[in-house]
Image 1 (cartoon, helix red, strand yellow):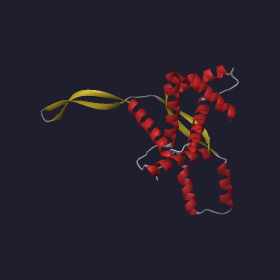
Image 2: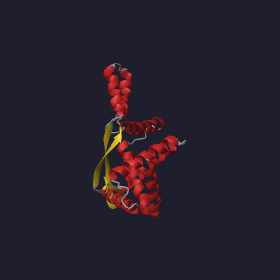
Image 3: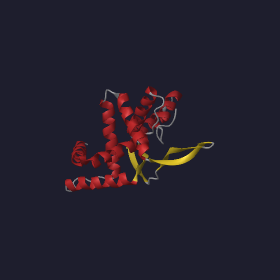
Image 4: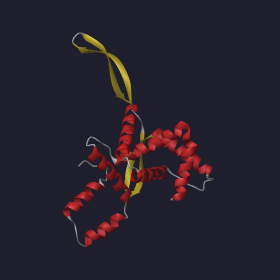
Length: 205
């Protein structure tokens, strides 16, 4: 089973179940881990980080700075909202396919098409199209999550792999997609609506 995040809690949990660990030490360790928090390192394009921070400034100004938000807070909130969506959706595989399509779409944007005249066979030249990676500067954002939420995300990905074995995504990639998609919604002119949703979500927490 391939790792579903750098922490790979699901594999560890399955291993512990297989070992059938018992005893006071295992009990206390399980109780401690239940409330533990772990860090995930999320890679994001620098522009998306800048745009998200600008949006957060607008939110804080709109609320007269009664709400203080960091990019880490935003990432945690978007992931929490996604997990709520996972729990409430009846079309599990459809949600997974939607996420995978976004990954493919983002990957395509990270390449540009270059056309060149090349010799494809001896004495036979033709125009050839190639995908060239675009060098995009990224920034790593470290976010702390409750252990059980990381496990839920890994379980979501594992369930999708069982439905479609070719499905390939880590939890870090999933969270990155959620943030980039959020920024794109803001760019489409939906910032006011998104802002209201964010404030409402914060008021409910």
